[in-house]
Length: 416
Image 1 (cartoon, helix red, strand yellow):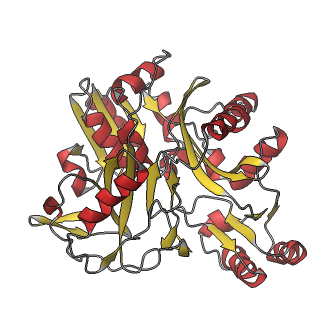
Image 2 (cartoon, rainbow, N blue to C red):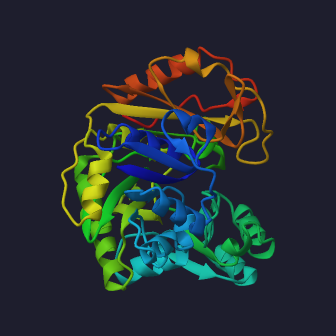
Image 3 (cartoon, helix red, strand yellow):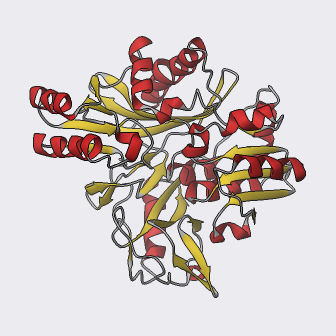
């Protein structure tokens, strides 16, 4: 098989690497990819949003199937575009990708089909939103309705913080058209986890759960980010809760999407919080999480490419997973998630043996790499327990000097 992976981040590097390990795969291409992926794929200089050029490449190169990493091309309809060209592609249609592309769409779907989630209201006018915040009080959650690269959520611990977030989004157009509408939700307390599933033609293949750390700094402090690290499994979440999440959330959501005439294929990501009333949905994504992919996908012992090819052909497949834990720590440029300076040299990564390095925002510079983005790379290791995997990662990270970069020193601290 020849496989094309669309995207350029850490998530896509993890996807590319998993395909490259398949005995059924002759060549993996990444469009546009990043320099760190070159060991695992051939890079193709085509932007993720250039659907015509991507489809032409898939056609001319006899690509067996295309796998889409990021949310933007999905939200813009790349799957529909490829399907119209008769090309095999794994992912949701534009209509189905609304489950991530519009928070309001997702909340309305959950309300209609009694899928447990936080109480909410939707606003397009700042005045009405602020009146609602004053009525409900804090803590409260303010979300940009559309895509905002994982940064469109403010968990406000005070009314002032919530009002500022509303003004930023609705009046200041902080996320452009993505924040022309906001969803304001009740604050939910509890343990969070990510539940991702492969979905095709109504068949659901759940993956092991993971937990990521969204805040920039140790102790879950600082601004929200795209994710500073992740680990899988999540020992403090009982298996009974995972089963309940599948039965009360994942399966009903797939059924609801079908009922609505927007059947979901691809990766359904459910961000879940375990409240006193049971698991509830924080958010849905229409693709793999980042950095969750980097710790979940490498646990798959089934041939990834054979599995995707089989489900695209309408077959069924059984998935198997490594029992061992994987924990990954994101290394980010100073200043992330706000403005960052690019171009600083990373330490010699070849000195870290026994870990896996997944590249996100890096660029080749001579024999080494320089930082070329906010989240630069992720370093992960395995262990019989989460704690052992954690020790293995941090021991290796401590061997190098990370000038102009930073990472959290407590990823996995919630694991019991």
